[in-house]
Image 1: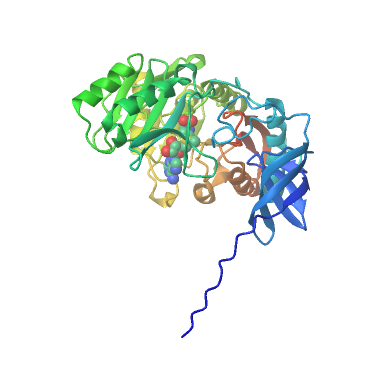
Image 2: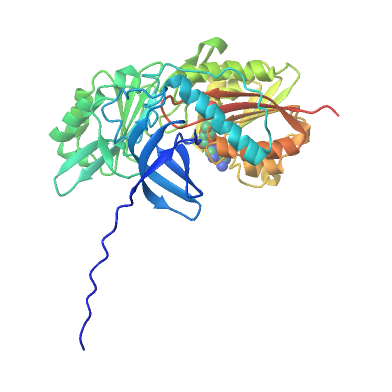
Length: 439
Ligand SMILES: C[S@@+](CC[C@H](N)C(=O)[O-])C[C@H]1O[C@@H](n2cnc3c(N)ncnc32)[C@H](O)[C@@H]1O
């Protein structure tokens, strides 16, 4: 039987579209319209006229790659980093810092109007940060290329699993900006570097830490060579099975509150120290916890908010899902001699009927969830028992969704403020104060 061979269809690159950018979304992408569809263009700014090529088409949405800026926004700036085009890190370097905040605020307004049906937001001044060297913690990927017998070290490329070789990163805390040179030299000199899956950096207040996560045992020679190459840092190793051995645990100080918090490198800590200090100050100023009040701090980590609030309130209950963070929070309460706080380990997506920490006499609720938000717990808590709810959010979509639940429970959004925790990135961090309406 004759076989028919059909020539493979060549994938046609889509033609370039001329687009007028109308606004920016909550991920920092330009938003335009084309043929009745919404089109997202990463790298484009409001009011720009650009050409772009469609990379993904859905029934109502298009995603397009920026080809050329025909008319530039007055807020367009020259990116400061040579890796900007490839690295998935700081995707807003082409936008002035002030304008980043304005656009982020507008993106939050749209989400609140859409999900929570709240308009006229009570904006307060944003918490801002130094634009460079603000990141005290970061994770560097380390990938072994078997074919070439080389190790690639760097950050993930934008929307990809590829690693971008980094030479210098100027948003990292100053002691780490050039560390890639040393790490690359070590990876070339040491055969066993191929067993390293990632390197974690952390500028604590006592030392600068570098953690090497390895998937196979390393020889003493490799341990010593890594330590010798990084003699100005505290080097620690994590084999994924045994507890990491620290000569001294990393810590950070909260000078305004006279606290020192210890943590382990796999615990969550707020990445931008200056913004964290200002955020804690703002939380106390907005909440005004009184000496006769009890506070519930959900998603409490190593006690960042709980221990501060315990200085003002009658008692604080902190709840956190990661056992090791809870252990650190308890230790931090002890070393700081704070006795009116208790910490509980609990997965806050679970039924709170199983919670031993629930106390119907708590007056104030603070929530600081990860990006998935706090819907499960908010829908279960009898919100009417609280007089104030402070929501610290790292995702405006889940904040707006959860705000609807709080709003429906009879609370008014009284204050809202951005916190520019991750300058030059599309991340939006927000603090929202809800106050129970008087009947
Ligand atoms: C954004 S961090 C905030 C931590 C702390 N409030 C701070 O300021 O450092 C979110 C915390 O929520 C915890 N978490 C995430 N999902 C959780 C869950 N389902 N139940 C309980 N805790 C969870 C994480 O381990 C992390 O410590």
